[in-house]
Image (cartoon, rainbow over all chains, first blue to last red; front, side):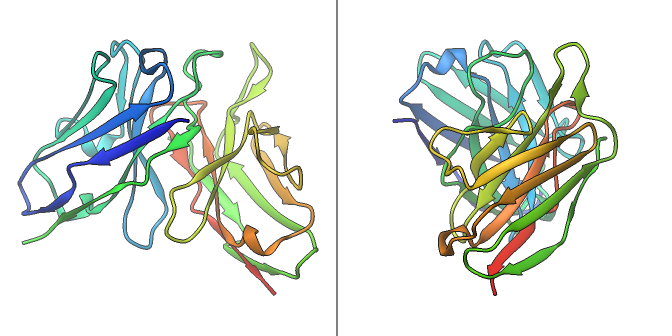
Amino acid sequence: EVQLLESGGGLVQPGGSLRLSCAASGFTFSTCAMGWVRQAPGKGLEWVSVISGSGGTIYYTDSVKGRFTISRDNSKNTLYLQMNSLRAEDTAVYYCVKVPPVVVFAAYYFDYWGQGTLVTVSS
Amino acid sequence: DIVMTQSPDSLAVSLGERATINCKSSQSVLYSSNNKNYLAWYQQKPGQPPKLLIYWASTRESGVPDRFSGSGSGTDFTLTISSLQAEDVAFYYCQQYYSTLPITFGPGTKVDIK
């Protein structure tokens, strides 16, 4: 059974930093691209970032470029999101998401989602 | 950016009746080299993470009831729930993955029971 367990959320002041982690199990982690999708309170879904299985290909949405860094440790089956220079508009539930194993190149839809971790940026 | 729009914003349907949600992309998400539409649909129930329903515009994810179906091509897509059940009350989102710069979701459609 695929499981994605996020951790690391919490309350942080504007300008602060947080690192989110996502512990994955139930599938061959290194063969799957992974990503982060966020949802502000009462709002819709916003894609944040995606990383290929090897970690060699990374994409970000424009609003987090230069502030957020996605990475993965395939030896630990863990995905990370380092978030720096946080802003109030980064307040959201952050979901760890899994991409199906590659059948078609760069087909980044998400077949499994974690329960999410809440990040609140406020003074 | 490929902008995704959905209509209606919300709808209320009687139990057992059909629910239809539309999704439109600002440019085609049909990749000509493989004839695939890079479009997925998700269901999000209150307090839960989203769940994948449909990918490649019309391929149902394993375990998804067959009352859910996806159709369309190019820029216009539809999610149909053929016979609405109480457990289908949720928000529904479309997502394009044709472009990763950025990957974009529709704003969502809320489905309720009339």
